[in-house]
Every structure is written in C-alpha cells, then in structure tokens.
Image (tube, rainbow, N blue to C red; front, side, top):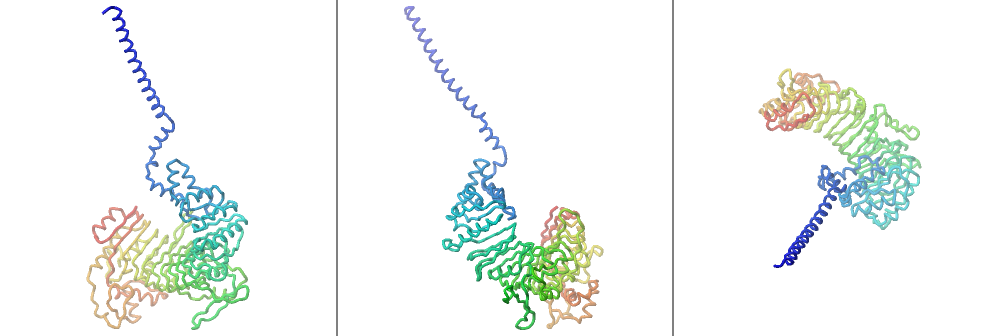
Amino acid sequence: MSRSTQVQNNTAIIERQLDSIGVDEQKTTEALDVLHTRRSSLLSEARRTAVDAQSKPIHWLPPELLLEIFTALTHIENTRTMTVEFLMRPVVVSLVCHRWRALAHSAPGLWFRVPLYSHWATRTFLNHSKRVPLELVWPLGTTPWREAFSLLCPYIPRIRSIRWHAASSGSSTVLDRLLLMLRSPNSRHRVLQMVELIEPHPRIIRRFGSFAVLEELRLVATMVYPRPGVPLPRLRLLKLDHRESLLSELYRLVTCAPNLKTLVLANTVPMQDVILQSASDADGSLPRVLALLDNGDTHDVPMAGCLEHLDWSFAPPAYTWLLFVLLPMPNLRSLALCLNTESTLWPQYMSDDPLFLDIAQNGIPVRLSSLQELVVQCIDDGALKHVFRKIRCPVLAKLHITYLPPLHASCELPQLPRLESMFCDPRLYTLTDLKLSHFTLDPDEARIMLRYMPALTHLTFLECPQVAAVICALSGGSCDNGHENPFNVWICPRLEVLRVVDSPDLKFQCLRGMIHARSQAFGAPAPCMSSASSNTGHTLPGAPSPRVVKPLRRKFRDAAIRRACNVTLSPSAGRATAAVYNPYAAVRPSQLRTVCIEGCGRVSQIEATSLRGEFPSLRVKWQP
C-alpha cells in the first residue's frame, strides 16, 4: 500500500468518526431539548398549582359528598333571607374550579330556585335546571323585572311554587300578571303548589284567584281575599305571619279551603273585626257563636273540620281557648303553642263588642275531643296557669312543656306550677309521653303530678333542677330508706323509657336504687288480695293487672291512701287524686327498657355502663 493510499484511508476513518460524533451530538441536543421542555413544564405555575391543589383534603372528596355540601349550602332556613347573595350561591360554587363547575352544572337540584331580578340570572338558572320542578323567587330589595314573562312562558308547566318578596308597588302588578299567566288555560291548572307572599312595607290586600292544585299558602305582612266559592280545594297548609291580620280574613281563607290540614299563626293574633251574635244549639247545650259581617249579613262561624295541626306563636294565655270558639276545630290532633306574657289581651279592630267581651270574660268550655299531642313553650311561667283552664283534652297522649329562658342573660329557672293550677281536670289517664324542660321541680308537687298520669310510658327531664328527688320517688321510696316500697304503691307504673338531660343534681345512687326497686317488683309474684276481688268492681285505667278491684267508700279510701303514700291531699284534688292513688290497683310496675343520661356530671360513664351488667334487659345510653 502506497503512502498516499494510507493517508486517504486515515482521512476517511476520521471523517466517519466525525460524522458519528455529529450524529451523537444531534441526538444529545434533541435529548437536551426534551429535558428542557419537561423541566419547563414542571416549573410552570399552572402545573405546580394543580399539584399543590391535590395536596388539600377538599379535593379528595368524592363527587357525591361534594353535591351534598352544595345542596346544604343552598338550603333555606329562613324565607326572609332570600337576598340576591343567597340565591346566587350555585353560581359562586360553579366559579371555584373546573371540577366544581362541571359538577354544579350536572346537578339540576341546585338550580331549581330561579331568581327573577335580571335576564342573565334567570336564563342561567333555567338552562341548568333541566326538567326539575321550578320555584320562582323575587329576591328581597330588588326592583321589578317586567320582561320575565316572555322568558318564563316555555317553563310554565314546571313551575311549582312562588316566593315573592315585594319591595315596591310595581311588584304587585308584576305578581298579579304572573298569577294570571299561571291560571291561563294553557297551564291546565296543574302548576302551582305553594305561594309565599312577603310585603314588608304597606298592607296590600290582593284578590286571589282559583288554583286547583295549590297546596301551601304562606302570607307574611300581607293578606289575600280568595274569590267566592271554593277556589283552593287542595290547600293543606296555611301560614299567616302578619300582626295586623283580621278575623274576617281568616274566616274567608278557611271557608275557601275546606280540606285545610295545618294552620300556622306565626306571631299572629287575629283581630276581632266582626260583630258577634249568639244562638243556642239544637239541643240547647252550649251557645253557638254567629258572625255579623260589615254588610249586615249574618253567617255561621266557619268550622275547620279537616284541620289536624295548629301551630300558634305568641298566643295570649288567658284567651287561647277563645280561638277554638271563634274557629271550631273538632278534629284537631296536635297543638303547638308559644305563649305570650300573662297580661296579653286579645286585640280588637273595631269598637268593643259586648258579646265578645262577655265570651272573653265568662268563657265557653272548650273540649278538644281529638287532641293527642300538646307542645307548649312559655316565656312567663304564670301564663301556664291560664292557658288550659277552659280547655279539656280527654284523649291527650303527649304533653311537652318548655320554659324559654332569656338568650343573653342568666336567670333562675322558674318553678313548675302545680298540675291542679294548670289544668281544670288534672286527671290525665291517657297521657303516655311527658317532657318537662327548663323548670325547677318541687319534689312533693312532682310526685302528685305524676300520680295523675298512671298510663305514662315515656318521661323526659331537660335541665330541671331537683330532679333527683323525683327519680327517687319513682322507686316508691327514697335514698334514706334504701328505696324500699313497703306499701307496693308505684308512681307511673307503666314507665318504660326515662331520659334525664343536663341535670347536675342527679346521683347514681338515686338512679340505680330506682331501677333496682322497679326491677325487683316486676319480677316478684303479684300478691293475692281476695278481699279486693269482686265481679262487680272496676279497674284503674293503665293498671298492670287485669284483676277486678272492688271500689271502697270514699272516706275509707282516702284514709288508706294517706297512710300508704304519706301525702296530704289538697281539696281541689279530691276524687281525682283518690282514683289515681288507689294502692290496691297497681301491684307491680312495668320493667324499664331504656334509660338515657346526658350531661349529668354526677353520673359517670363507668357507673352508667355498670347498669348494663346488673340489669341485662335494660338499654342504657350515656353522653357527657
């Protein structure tokens, strides 16, 4: 090989190596570009923000739980808070992030409450509501938007309720036009189910048209006059929150709603604006009240024959019974009262009516033959001595009495009035559920009260001082004699559930002794009293044994009761006390099934748990 050939070969080898290096250099440059791109991507603010967001627990929640949170955020508690800020909460939720936006738009249940104050807001809610029933809302403090009708026309079949917060006189015109549109033949009268009207400024009286399917009507600071006839045949709930409501207006609404089930009078006492006339019943037993209207026509006082539930806030205690005379409710089953102060009078709109004053002063006995549940709240303990004096409840099963203490001031809880001072007839033979809240108990009076309730099965004390002595009395004895009951006379022999809440004076010794005494008496054989057996006798309501008891003469019966129970009977108790205290009727109590202890500092969890081991059939609940 010549020298020139060798040089050419070496040059070719160098060229090939340079080409290989160039290829490697190009690959390395491309790899560096990829690394730079990945580095830039990792260092970008959006990516770091997304990664940081995943570190927050709120983003770990599943969609189902997020929807529950969104629904709770848009839940309504007070209709008077229907502001624009509240109604726009679904929009605020959808602007948080892309995930929340997609989730909110896919949930039509968040967009059913449509605000009527701007085209954009109404259109947004209507588009996302899909096919769910709609609720039209006029937010408080907004101006009328008259162009809403053209936008709402395609959605009329889906409108189910209206909440109207009027802010000006023009709002009444818009509402009337909207109601007229909903009553049009195209709606087929299958549209509206609930209407709530709030007029915060002037008193506006509106004539209400016929809605065949209207089920709820709520009026705040306004009243309506239905058309003659029966325009509201399916109305089930009527709520009035208007301090200047009139009795004649209530008559018109009740007359036009023959199937009314629930009546709510929120801080409302209907003012007497009709002239009353009296007439006797067909049998001449009780006077019947007639109403003479302003035009001179005399009409019978309407009767709410289907009304079953009444909720009345700030009722006048001494005149509460008068409502049942002016508006008879023969089928009333549950009554909830929040009493005003003792000195509150029934307001009158017109000049004094002699008949009305005579009825208010003398009173007509009211018998609520179907009332089974009675819930009473009072801000004045003296009011309890007036509200039930003219009301009789022969089949009452549940009684809850609560004192409402001041919110921002500490005070001593008042003493619960005697049962004889509250009820004209204290014999509550059918009562099975009693709850007392925020009252100081007098042990002797509490014993007498519970003896009037032989069929009681559920007993609850909520923040009632001196409840320990009452618990001891349920054993027939006391802590001093080891909770022994030598006479076998039991208070509340049918008691099965006992609940004591926030009572710092309750001791475990009292609780355990009472449970032990009643458990032993339940397992012991019933004593045989042949002298008391008779085929011609009678049994006490709620007695634990079907044994027939021969009635004693009154003077011997009262003497035996005094010796056995070691109590002094008041003259007002008389025959009722003797019937309930009969020591020969109750020979052994029922077995306690449940005991709930909450917030009682002198009963520890270990002590409460020990009751389960000592009494296996007893269910014990304890909370600090």
